[in-house]
Length: 168
Image 1 (cartoon, one colour):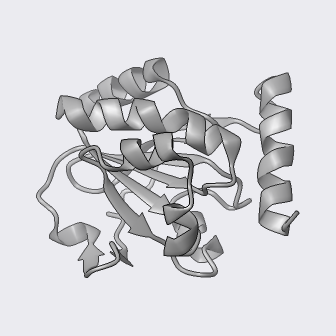
Image 2: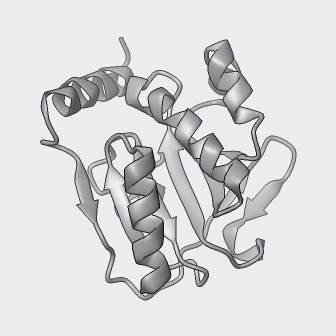
């Protein structure tokens, strides 16, 4: 078991026992967030995308809670309520080796990008200083973080967070 797999497994077990490591907080940062990541064909810069609420989800294929939340993210993307960007913190070959049901979800209107080989700096910039996965950040139309959660998300959290972000 790799260190990353062990960490995801420990986090998943901890979360199943209760929200010990789940962090749910609104960011007070007023600085727009940005990144430049690859979709496998070209580099995408967050700031170059049209302004709209955006959900950025950091995940790995060997992280059970990451995989469980993918259908909710795909449903949100299909609804058009927000742009959904998934950032796979693994090699593209590892993403391609994800289970078939996840591959089907990734073909939904999600923007699937791959993070850097050492993602701690990117995760810290998006409010995750401990590097735990999954980590989800909701950005307002100005690309400022207005909600984030380290731990598994669900439809209710997405809906409540998007509504709260819309009011801020």
